[in-house]
Image (cartoon, rainbow, N blue to C red; front, side, top):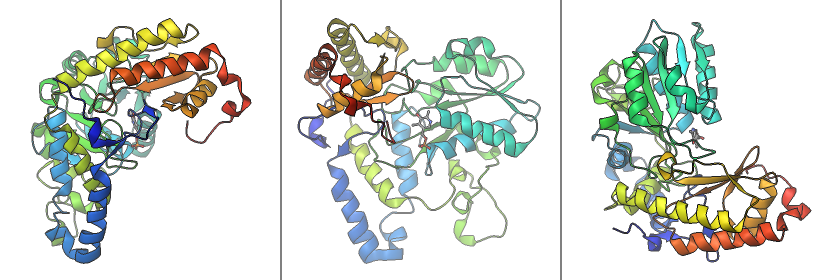
Length: 395
Ligand SMILES: *Cc1c(COP(=O)(O)O)cnc(C)c1O
């Protein structure tokens, strides 16, 4: 069944947006929702809105809607903060579950912030932990029985290469390690079944495929059977069992809520709640089929039109998430030339041109037009214009 629902999104005319893997487009309902939250709830109700406008329940409500998209049970997800913070919390909690072990395993394709958070936590703990980062294809072999935690991002942010969540989690568990999955490029992009996967933790963000907008809150999943054993780092008052009892000592909530920290960002959460309406009735397997069709068409069109670009993503769609990358020496300049012509992707150092596929608001015609414009840029070497080599802060 088609999952296309372009009419729910604001897509600027003349633009083909292939960057929904980095910042999703604006849902049309977002502006009115934000306006209501600001003008009515905040403006007229002020502090009362925590009770009367459902602000206090919003983080949990939104968490439950995300749970539905990643095969997680109701009540298993806490929302808030940023993904980096949630990585830190998950890693700290996971390390505490294996007090005798000292090695964290990730991979060298992981997103830098995930690795930085691990490095920072290792320094803070100061207990002789180390971080191992083999190449992604060597991760399976690196899971040995000295590993405390395996912490991986399912879909590689640069290449789209996808780890086998089930096989890696099984191997991690067989070796006695705790498993953390980062779903930054998975939630809303590929089918995920947290219950079947059986991993202890997952984290993710909501401004990529879930269209929650810049700075939208992150989420953290903890497997229900381990929740009450978690002793959270960053023990904030909203993770307390009774925040308004104002007790002197921390006593964690008896649910995943213990992984919350402080006051939730209500305006962003209300926008995210509205953005999630676009997922009502979407079967993630239909979404995946559409994503594969779009990416296969794009690869075929680009391969025939732009021989100078080399595919940097796995050729097998089942080994890829919902993005396609090409390597090109002048990739930054070529991407700027594309952007000026209305095809929006992004660039990741050193030479990756990256394109995301979001079947809720992209169709086959978009993808073919994008490839045609790429052909113009490449054939005519439009990227040689010096203005395209001026580096912006965000690439
Ligand atoms: C996008 C992304 C992040 C970004 O983290 P923030 O704290 O939300 O800025 C972290 N990790 C991965 C794997 C990502 O893809």
